[in-house]
Length: 294
Image 1 (cartoon, rainbow, N blue to C red):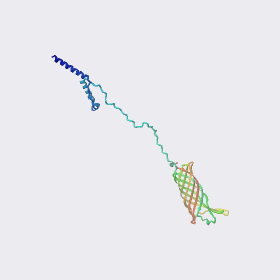
Image 2: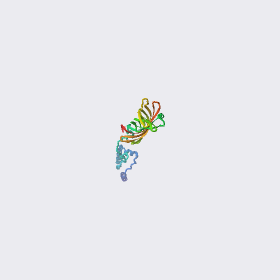
Image 3: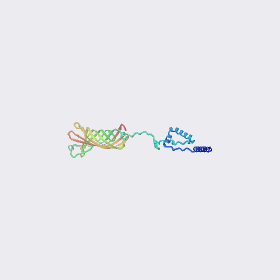
Image 4: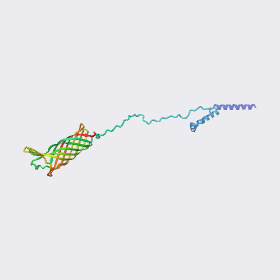
């Protein structure tokens, strides 16, 4: 009986000691697998984990201290600005109107007056019918009239209306016989101009028509001078030919002064059917004024 009592006491002491050691030894937890970690991170697993911790604490007397959440704090990353860092704002400017080309500022219509001198002769005249030992001399006259230029500053058409004098002189020593005609001359010239706006050069050429209004015969015979009007009753009054020249235009004031030299060659005939070829070297000055836009 005494031995039974000692054995019971020893068993009680051993059990108490094991219980004390179990209470003092911390509980060993198994590593948490990634699947458990991801489940623990889910909002729905929070309650399950809390109940499990309470159960372990009630059985072992050990409660784990709260562990900081393994979920890293969300970092808000601001998107990088796509705009360049160093952008210098430029003031808004309204597009400037393109300057019109110089050609568009030129007038397409010019009008002017021409005045100059003529140096003429007429080939085809039978000098032998007048006398022997004679030769032809040129006759000096003048021309004047209006000019109209239509077109651009480079290519244009220039019709003219001129009063002009043509003639020829047949000289026999100290004596002479001179024919001088008054004509209406209408050249229509194609004109090409080049150069700067203040100084331009030009050339022109084209057909010309003339109408003979009348004329005079002057003579000097043995010191005696005389003149008479030419009878144009049966004379051919119309003549046609060609004309061409060149010159320079200088801008002065609102318009331009033109200096030009031109040569005209006509084809005509007299009452006897003789083929006459009046020729005229013209040197003239004109002043042209633009009409319309500038």
